[in-house]
View 1 (tube, rainbow, N blue to C red):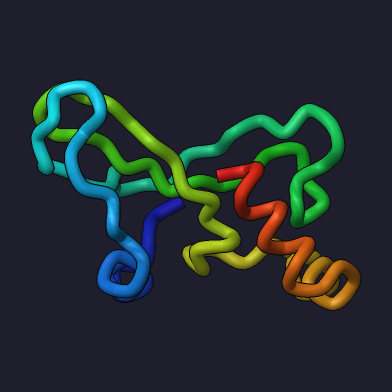
View 2 (cartoon, rainbow, N blue to C red; view 1 turned 90 degrees about the vertical axis):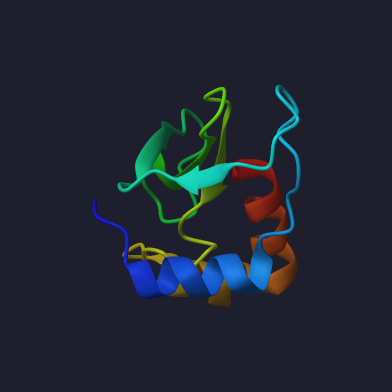
Length: 101
């Protein structure tokens, strides 16, 4: 799935505070142009599915990668994401974001 460049730029300007790569210690980060998927074996993901869409960010010097939950970051919207927000409230959603990204 292609990434919405405007949403990506907004997320980076508001949220990105990373810094140096833990492997090579450069600060050369770039997002991959498409979202990835992380399998969610049990229980189902926050959108009720078996995968969690992720934004993959890699160090362009050494290739180290990290992932960010694309649902929580607002890059995509799952079919049941709004109902999960209503069902569990912000505290639970924050916990899901911390454990799935």
